[in-house]
Length: 591
Image (cartoon, rainbow, N blue to C red; front, top):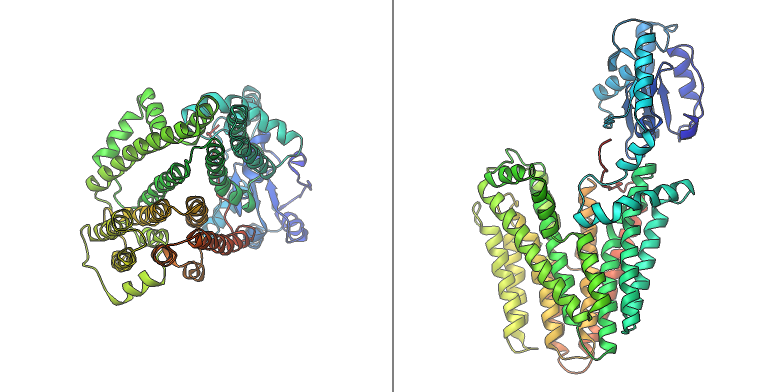
């Protein structure tokens, strides 16, 4: 217990335990452990030191964070009143010890009954028990000796479900880097920051436009990914979860990837090859892929009767090992994607890198979206109000769409919501592509898009395919900005558009991770201030029509990007460093 940072004090009975707990400063975590406890140190670590849970328990031990301490003290005082002040903390007996037969176990049950959620971590092969006699104690001690808890701790530091490249080429050694960092007092946030700095240096190397710079960029990008894996493994290894870490982990991956795209585009420009359109196209495609995943998962994670033949087939394929890895590779996750980018950067040109990225991500998007469409059409799932609220938040509707939704109502049921969204997006993108550049037809299309977007979200998004609405809106907005900037022939318009889409994409990723953490979307004032997807699309269309000559369009896009980035970042940083922000992390393998 002392090795885990606790001050240890023995209590003779439950009454003394209550007095000792009451005397501990209110801002500190407390733990109650049965003196007969036998188990692994890592079992205690999992049960008593994870900062994400207000209360947690394993057999024979219970912990409470400051927010759960009043409930724990009330439960302990009720237990003292029920059995008498002189009752021992560890009542003797020869019967098998269940959770309810130890003081920590009974208190955990009492906390649950009172409404205070108590986390019970999976221990796997780790031992945590309260023996009642010499034979049980000997058996428990033998079980402790039979399992190396440090090996379990290292194994548990690795995510349970990861990509092929990460699992077989990174995690076998990155977990040891994580342990090395833990033993030297480094934090996951420091490793995350080191990963970002390494990726930015890689982007700078790519921006040199030289073969040596490209080779260095590829090597540094791979090293950045190793550190990116290490920070999560360090968090799981040492249970150093934090709100700041959640924010850094949730946003830095995108910042690193987009900065690297920009570095490649700058490097290509030094060699006389303009690939900014490809760089922005790759970013748009990747962002739209992600929002498809986010939207589908939010729509279905708490759905009732959430089954389908397609899902059953997927579960059946999971029993065939090679299909699992093949399907994980097809979706081109971050490990495979960054490995491909790094290798191609070192041996080819930025244009080839972006061609490969666009083709690979397009195929992955087709595969994943087709599977989700089949699941949605074949399952009989009833979506909840929470899911509909999450989809509405992901839609990012601004004042124009909200105003239309308040006045008009689309027909209920069927596929009307995604059809209206598709129709609006098709009108907008087609106008940007095929009408004369700088004409007011594009502005008219943006108005139609705003009206159809408002109609699409005018009713709760509970239909089978309503999860398509947010990704359609993302594609419409991003592609409009890309097309208008590319057609403008204004110097540096596409790099300015790259900055604008980056700022908006950050806002959308920030929304996703807030919803995942259970705290809801960003405040409405923020969405109204930055215009919503339809408002920003209309503004860009108007700017293209008004600033048709000179460099004004580039300046306007740059100013808009800076304004959106400033508002979004300030509010996001305020939220993620506040005490109300969730700690969003992926779990490792079970021991």
